[in-house]
Length: 143
Image 1 (cartoon, rainbow, N blue to C red):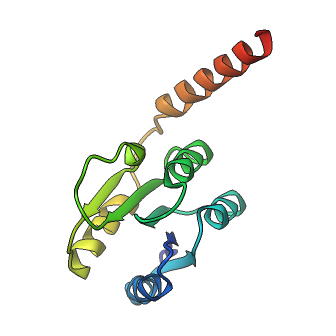
Image 2: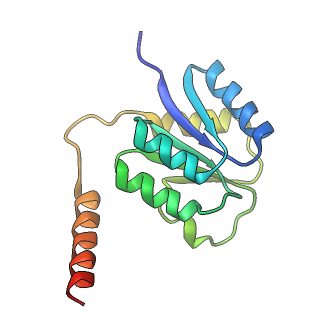
């Protein structure tokens, strides 16, 4: 039997996250729910997750997406947003679902995002980001 895909579910509305957790667990995913970005960051540092699922009205979402990418550049993130508008803070999200959606659409998107890619891993963007951060830190030290 294959191991369950682990999903970290972040949302301020506990009723909605509870329903999503039940939906995911009935479809053989291991879901963990948290209510704040700080708590989600602690969970990301403590363990490995296949997907980060975020409900949009959340404080410091940009920081959480950046931290998730820095910790594991291969982990995907899916943001559920109520309305479509230009949101620059969601630029690091792998996918954004907007508006009303049915559970089948959500499960299909999760299935696609959690699928393991075969072949060699590409670490280009993660290494580029580490080099850029190292250059910024070096500039700060010399200034």
